[in-house]
Length: 139
Image (cartoon, rainbow, N blue to C red; front, side, top):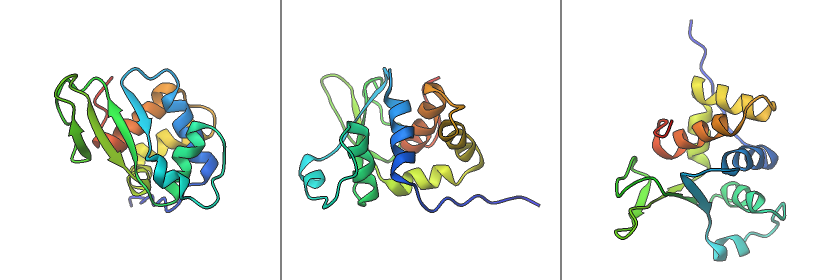
């Protein structure tokens, strides 16, 4: 018998932990969000950049992930643009993308390691790459 994992929600602090760990020292990507949409959120939950990213996701908005290693290529259908000059690819992801990955056996394991304090940058980065690309593309 196979066990099915279904993650239906993230807490604000869980997203902050995951994003903070993945963003720390990353060389391949940068996260961002639309300032106007963020300013329209009635009760933001924090003050740091990762808090704003979590607030955006939990409010039903998408965040952007800019892939600096793309070299003009798109690695998933979440790509919204590629800069012709420097080859960066910009992706948009929402909470549903995080939930989808967290509901897989490998994604759940990565997430659990990060949230329990046993994961590191590489663990969180692998989770985020799977959210953005559908698989680990870098390393």
